[in-house]
Length: 391
Ligand code: PLP
Image (cartoon, rainbow, N blue to C red; front, side, top):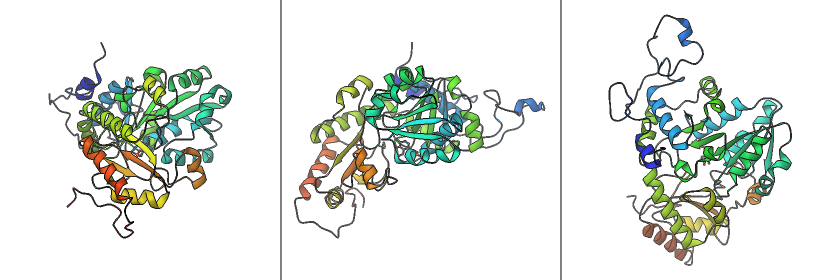
């Protein structure tokens, strides 16, 4: 029987070390003694458990890859030095000149920037709106090799019916990739619904402590083919020390996500509900801790709101234990022009909130008091953020 996600988060990939260590040690090394003098042993992909060079594989990295593969329900996972290293390696190994990739228009700004590079390599990119994604078969012509999705999206939390999209794409021989960073395997497992590859920024919820940068790709063995050698060629492997921090963070993923889901829901209820709630209920086990909303009055009012926060800290990124707020036009979606942003529902008044695991009553009180403070006379000279708890 498949173990529960809390059990997998704690135990998968652990206690296999030859020293019989209960925790996975950090193998802070990059090279290993040749196992034999037979040159075939170190040509191509070394057999599993034979380590030669850390850009190829490393025992700490391999153990945490096993944990993530078990959590997502894939045969194999590979860890990368950042979410963008994972994304660019998948795109550049799975696509070739002449291919077309259909990408949801509403994806993370860094992914938009990377997809925008592909035409340089003779790969065509077509951006699809949410409505176009809903009629995908009309867009699946012969050259389409890949469908790139993100659900829920950064920052506006839009969802797509990925089991349906995966089935439609498969029928036409196209590969589906899902950036599942916002959901984590605790809230959705796209591989079980027919999606071919899942990518993550591990810098977010998977690690959860805002202290490392990393990425991952997970899938069935046959689909993962070529991605490991792509990682070796492009060089974006995760460092063993960062991997150690990730496995430590991941052991509490399940309980952190329970709290993020509960806090996120309560704050969302306090503000307003979500237009795709029904689809989220169908696809997800929890809704996560991410929210996005617009402040009435535009940029200046949005800045006044952010300046008035005392507990919620102003910083890019998300998915950590601490609540953070940011303006997507300044961070995740700075690559978009004003018109492009507006078409996706991202304006200069959009605030993205990553609800942490602090007491939800304290988070709500902070948001309410920031909204109240906006009714007072503007204080144009106050610093952008002063944390209440920062000395
Ligand atoms: N995917 C999503 C949804 C993200 O939000 C991010 C970063 O914010 C990335 C990918 C890129 O990850 P990284 O910053 O670890 O390269």
